[in-house]
Image 1 (cartoon, rainbow, N blue to C red):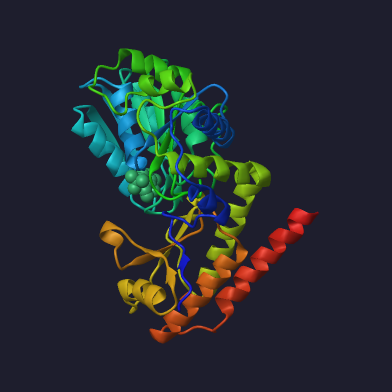
Image 2: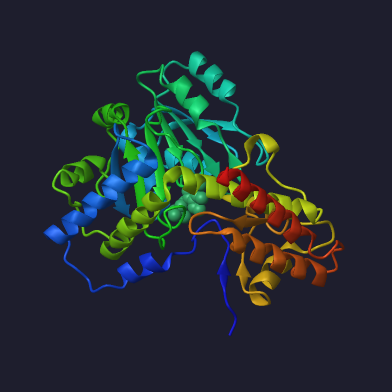
Length: 388
Ligand SMILES: Cc1ncc(COP(=O)(O)O)c(C=O)c1O
């Protein structure tokens, strides 16, 4: 038997409480029992998204369904939109927008660059007809955290332009203040900070985004936001929902509320800091720049002379620890350690320990135990600070 550890930025581990609720016998979705589940999900999501003003819609789809929904519900073919892209998921938003015939301008950042809000400000002042700004808050491919608060402060002054935020690995890991930051559409997926299996996507829709909906003429059916809103008024969904996942979501949201959102985010910050310290103590170089490091995933350069794909395979096969490799140009060159959702201190220690053993086996030289020691010190310091 080998015990397995899932240390990827999605899917993420699912707490036993959530798994057990999902194992209950199926219930029918057109019943008061399920209406109560919908209510609990929406109320809990509003708490996590920090919104009273926006509606929160839930789809049976992967996160990409939410991304696609934001395009078809906010725009018309030919609309000018600006996509700030600095990684795989920013690129995906541009691809979806192009697939629907939008007039897409991209601000292209390298995967190690943070989006500069001044570039967005400059574009908006030169292109008054821009109907949408699209940005990834937490870019999972690079670990970069973009300042959507600053971008929200800019876009709010353009009454006909909506700000669409992919927070699929942001929600529940970093601050994402939908109302206070003027974020019109915020999207997440179940297999991330919400601590569920894959299969649900969530989107918040602000009053300004509803105005964009009113003028939007792109074809839509399954992801037509208004269908979801009208059904939400009756605590239900337009189509057969992912019943078990929603029952699980209600339970996961209870756990988040019990911990308190601020504490959840502080835990993610602590785990991210410990992971970074542990990797740096091993002499590994962090991929994301200090100005934009998120809490969801830590990407790290694979040291010279080490085969990154073999490292990921060895961690999984020999030590039972699944981490993610790099994507696209960075495949084999970086590794990505996830700490998003149901993670605690000792998940980080376990992962760093396995990483040390695998690196030693692959011939990389360092003081064994140095990564774990550095991480322990960060974790202990954080606990001491929190107790004060
Ligand atoms: C930032 C981000 N956006 C979008 C997606 C796409 O979500 P899904 O794979 O659930 O469709 C992911 C998935 O990892 C992601 O991390």
